[in-house]
Structures are given as structure tokens and as C-alpha cells.
Length: 184
Image (cartoon, rainbow, N blue to C red; front, side):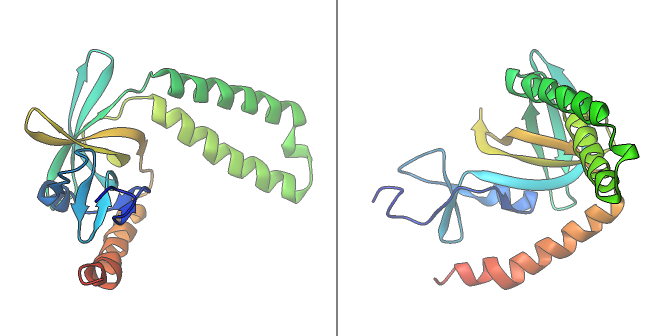
């Protein structure tokens, strides 16, 4: 049975770290893992950074969500990230040239929204520190017998309210959605 015939889920799945360690690797394609009756390869986690190590071209973060911890690899200075930073800086210059502050209320709202986007983009290129909360999306991988995440998106969480919301969100997902997948 190939992957197209099975239930694959290509979007990052919001999941507790403990469950990432429990996932069983698919026999047909080792890039996918069994999560209930679905095959997944991307996850979305949120947790506190408990360790930071610089390794050659990337950073290695140990992230803990109180259900477990996992290693996350992320390259802050990959070509893709540097290109995004350059595009963001060009967009910032364009916004400054338009001078949204002296525009209408909708212009001020647009400036506020773009300000958040610019700040988020800059955060992604600066390494996180121990004790900061991180939102990580990436591919599940087994590297020398250790389960880890090769992150394609990593952001510092700016509000502790987001951490609390995430716990309630995951509780609702597990009880209302994931629990119903098992018998489908």
C-alpha cells in the first residue's frame, strides 16, 4: 500500500513532545510516522528552551513542554532565512517610504500589523536563549537513534498567555479530534 492510499497529513500536527517519542516509523516510507490512523512527518510544538548548543552551521535546542523534551535543529542563517530577512528589510524600507504614520486609521493599523511581521522575522534569525519559550515546526527525524526535529520554522513566543492557550488547545485537540481518529 503506497502513501497515497493511506491517510497522510502533510501539515504540521500540533502534538505533545511525549507523543513524538511514541510515534512508530512507517515501514514503507521512513520519513513518515504513525499518529493514530494518520501518517505524519511534520509537527508543531511549543515549549521552553532548556539547552542551546551551536553546532557548525546550525543551532541545537533542547525544548521541553512538561510532557517530555526533544532536540530541535535549526539553521538561523540558511539561504532561505537570509533571503527572507533581506525581503523583510526591503519591505520595511517601502513601508517607511510610504509613511503610514501620517495616513488614515487603516494605514496606522497596517503599520501595526507589518510591525509585528517584521519583529517576528527578525526573531527567527537571532538565536534563542535558554529559558525562552519557542514555537517550533519541523520534520520528525531519527538521528543516530535519537528522535529529534529538523525545524523549518522557529520563533520566540513573546507572550506567556500563548503558552497557556496552547495547553488548552492541545487538550481540546486530543479529546475532540485525535481520540476520534483511532477508530476511523
